[in-house]
Length: 243
Image (cartoon, rainbow, N blue to C red; front, side, top):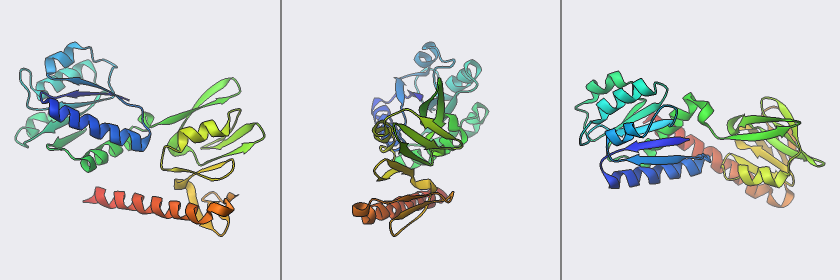
């Protein structure tokens, strides 16, 4: 995901980049940030189709954030932008820019995470996805649609909205997905998305679809704790968004 930050305060740019990097790591998103110290330089860089999201400070030297955002929308109407501001004084003037959100400075990680999570829910095409080679086709599958993956001889069976049989090493998929907290290897050659797990009882992992898998005998207690911790963290995030 390509992101631009337009702010005349280098310290605030650095802090925002750090928070964006933290969020990207937690969601396993690939992001690239370009930074600009004024609106004119940003506009001169050539915007159409270049950025998915722009963070724009309202108060800047030269062309302010509101005027920059209005020009940006004419050049690239599909680009999502967020205003950064230390005051609510000019929010009414900013309404015609149709910003996705107005973020008050100083910005904190929790507030930014809520906004970016909302963005990904509304624009799921920006979410991380897995390219699956099925026959002669390459099929992109969103992480959020992956339910479980297991080995079958030299193939992997990938269950998403459809089921795919891919000739790919299980460890290759595992190394990509396990960086995302949703995914957990519960036994040799079996990886599940915890969002689709109904329960872990005795030595069985039950999926919400009714499919079941055997848990690793030696790690059953650890695996059950991972599920408990994951659900607790999800619940905590949901409660924080309501505040």
